[in-house]
Length: 517
Image (cartoon, rainbow, N blue to C red; front, side, top):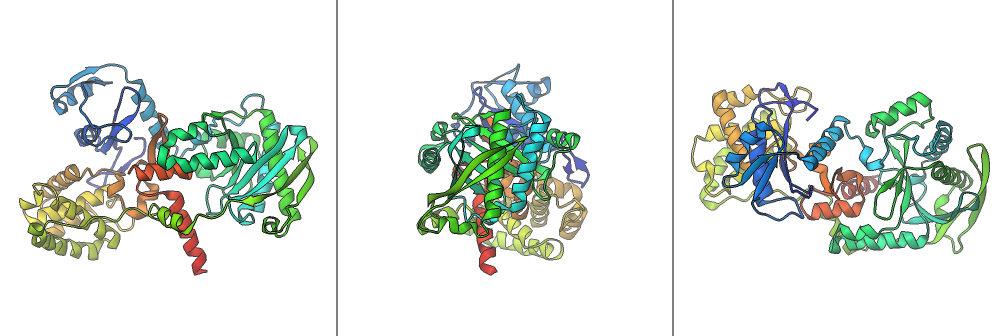
């Protein structure tokens, strides 16, 4: 991996990623370990690929394995006795790992999400992009997501001069993120998209292959922008509003592929942004447009490039209602990580109580309640192992090992973190040597599959910043699920691929904040 993290001794290291793919390119398993100890990553990755592969792959041992280096040719065969292991080309693996490295190296680079490596695609000129940026900047400054009640309050828009006839659109961003405008060619297309999205949970993501084409203007924060696009914006001095206002465009084809925008596409989106801006300026209380018995239409002359075009815009007669109470309750369970299990066998209850009593003293003096709960979870998980490793060894050694294992996975030894401490403080507190503490820490990490960015062993407050917690495979591509639609996030959470649904969590927090106010 391109980024560094604190190692066992607090010194920076670049973690090693091990990934196992099927010949079709589907990811079966993955794990992260120390670069000097490759087996820390290889063993759990292979074990996961065989016993608990990522959906929709099925459990089972392979008959043949291909590795891409002579080093792996030495390391892998002992882990797969009886399996033919050969060296050869691994194009699918090379692509997946390259995508993952690029994603992390760019610190949230959304290039794959937006389908953009340059704004100057097809016949688009710098002048056309400048005009679009000007319109998008004006729209962002009006904050339409603060005036349109919800993304279910649709509007329609027509501009014959630009071949726009009865487009249906919605403003997104009412939950405080993912600001923008989504557009369909008709209200019927929007209804079809919503219908397919509702069928995803029961029938799988494949139903979305029949989704109608649509397009969007998205506003991204600077940190989420690909460096190439930022450089292009700087070079041509395209205007950007203050805030998370970097505009990108997305043209989604029927097969959910992304098409590069042409100059005509950009002009259409510029007209939409301009019409929305004028509509917002002319309606001090825009929400009432959906509340009255009749729906009014407004006609504006909108500047697009060097010309002005007539555009008609107005609210639709119907809005998409909020979910029924039962549906909202059903969705709420995906808004937070599943509760951790603290159950332990009765025969080990006394042992676990002694361990936790000792560990709680360290947590009180050096850590916090969040660390304490995660460490309690790890001790309970070790107690449930059959046979439990806690039956052997000294209690201080296990205490130091568990605390060190959880701490190392959450960058406890990094001075920039709060809380933080040195590994030696752990060893001294429990009265063990560094060698004993590190040895038991490795046992714990191996038994519980604890590694950097392990979603199950990451502090809840750090999950948002954990790249591996949100990386899923969609149609053969490794994607950050937080950039994908809600229905895909729900499917990933239901399959256990992500700890919770970020969109629902953010919405729940926003609702709670509104109630407090």
